[in-house]
Image (cartoon, rainbow, N blue to C red; front, side):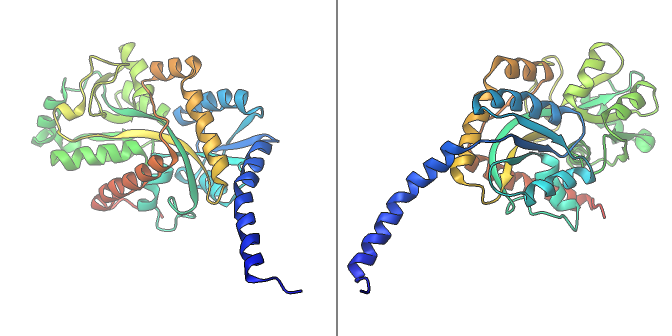
Length: 326
């Protein structure tokens, strides 16, 4: 006997009513195995954040979060692995301002779409970069630096960073755009090379993460003229914000967790809750404070909007400077 329209309607209604229960059941069964966390960079601040938060999440999820470093191509290699992974909640990645906001503008053949291919979980943290100079550098303050750069004496002034297309590279580029000055960019292989060059007098100035240069400044090995957040940072309260001299100047290195697109929403929300809870733990909060890092914990929708706005903002900076990597 063929089903009547009324029976078909009732069957459809019962199926829809069962969907929340099915989703709850799927979420309750997850996780039943370790969760892989791809960090698309080598050891550094991003790796530290992932390990601190992941260790706390492992306790409440009942499964280990296994950190897998997959560096290369400015973060593109590991990020692509995450984008192509099965959307089952067992692979997530740490995305940064580089992988999810800057790279789309500077890599013509990016192997993933930073907005379409991911389900944002939460922004974990942000930290300012810092403008550092060698101890012998003539400028003692940011105003003195700007005056120097606008003078004829600035012809040989260059700024170093940990690499082309990084947040610190774009920070230096934005600084030049807002002050109407031009600086030669000298990329190094990581923060260690930048610090060595500064301390040895090989490099006059640099932009780098605050957590990388501030310990050296406290030891008197170099000087930090300013931080790149809009306000001063609690880890270095006596260091002015560059924005006090250059209005609107802001450059924060941020990171957060992403899952592959089409990961079930209930799993994304569970990961979000556990990540936010981890950020509140003393072991994480205290370490963040020591490094000058601010915890976030935004919702998935808030994080998605933030990534879109950062993509537009830094894309404009990169295009104006004609920064591209083949």
